[in-house]
Image (tube, rainbow over all chains, first blue to last red; front, side, top):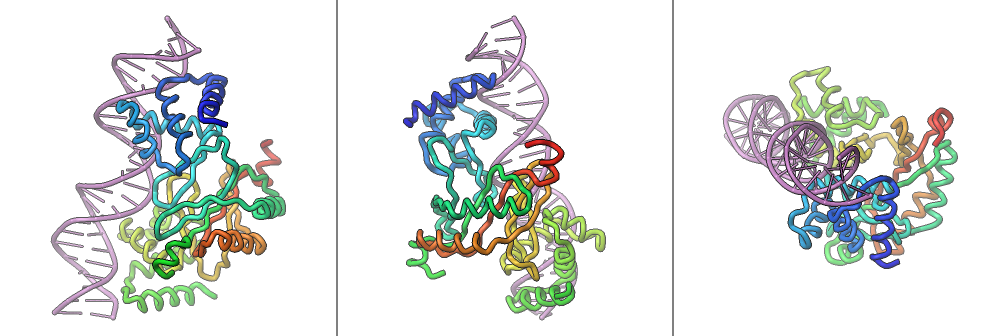
Length: 148
Length: 148
DNA sequence: GTAGGTGCAAACCTTTTGCAGCATG
DNA sequence: CATGCTGCAAAAGGTTTGCACCTAC
């Protein structure tokens, strides 16, 4: 799925929810789809402002909330006090490894892991909606360079 | 291990690190050990102030940082903007399920799950230090009561 | 006696909100 | 043309910090 298609899909869904499709939202969605990084609200604001310096921080926050509710974006907590986001469209579910030294975030997926979570939840009577798994440690490069 | 023993252990470890053992730290550690809840810094402050109303918020934050570095306490993010902590002493490693309706946090442990994480990390060359797994959904009670 | 710790209050930083004006449907 | 959205600036709320005083070792 190309960005334009994804962009249209978001537009369609928001309108269906009775929300308006403004030039700001269009720009923010495009910027969010264009990066595969795990961005903070402020970083996304920076990206948007390259196109239109007048976009306000409040609008970015408000739009991220809308996108999260609509399921196009997911928050993830990098443990540094800032919320980070990633878009979910055309992006299979995955978990994250965070390098505590250089900060790099690597995505991975393990089906057995997913399955065991379901099993564990069922045992406790939980119905899982979503989950968050983050492994913290040292990436290959940092191990080579710096011990630990 | 009783609280007094755990308390002594923390004291011993901090002193070994060249840190001082003050009446405030003693009180904060005792309060932290006494609860099995997942407390915020502010809640812990409240507990401490029942014994000594003069303990300052800054000291609680600073002490939590020290305890986290020494490995006696672990942070966990409940997704509500506040950091939460739990003590680790005499408390085997476990993961958390969070009910999105009533907010209850249930601890669980699954060895196979732990193992698969190691495997996944090794495949990517990561050396894991710690991890955080949270499953979000509906607990048994909330499913019964309220759909979802 | 001298690090290191404490309390206070102010600073910080991310996120949220009130409000007046604007643009979408 | 009504409702929802935006921008601005101010507020909120959790956490950190500067500084003067204090205390454990």
